[in-house]
Image (cartoon, rainbow, N blue to C red; front, side, top):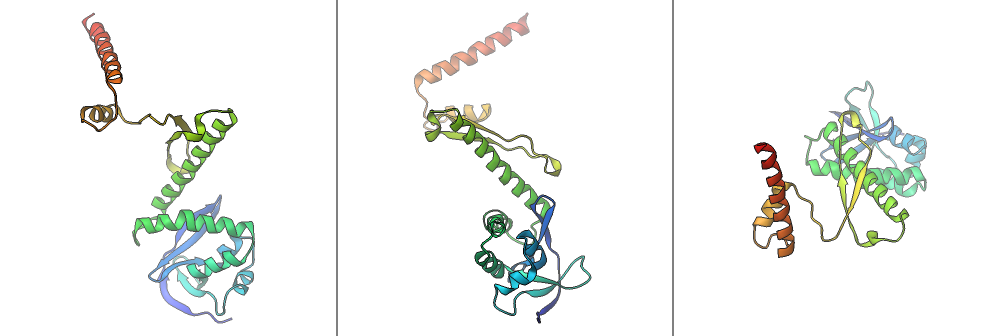
Length: 222
């Protein structure tokens, strides 16, 4: 089977598709390309199985940095066709990973300046946010009847080096609640019409602040 050989050298991004399973994505002027052997392995298929689903000649031989020989790659359109025609769970997972997570992140970066490190960070935080929301909702529903059907959630993102996230955390907050720093809260209250707060709430807040200040001043004086 003859494939067109592109003589330009391409620098691929190595992205984590699954644990210890990197996929290389090549960004070119005409779009994204993928190493055919890695795509096949991710779906537990043979390269020939993928090529049989495509019009021939399929793929293109690309020179990749770090490789001694040209590598058969599939275009983004060919990848879409492959995952559409192969009715396997692995194909559906790959489609979600590319279409819903990775591709939007690459396009958001807006050009060749995209780095593997920044993309890893974006994907790691997106995955952690999904975990946090899922865990919080599951716990709320399992607790039984309650206000969770009409509630909002606070999602705490935490990222550590080498993708070592802390345990996910999500917290239920009331519909009338707001989340702000103390400095931000003061600005919200001070600006007329910025924050819907009634006189009773303002009096309670002012009283609490005066009480705390009096307590601290008393300790300083003592």
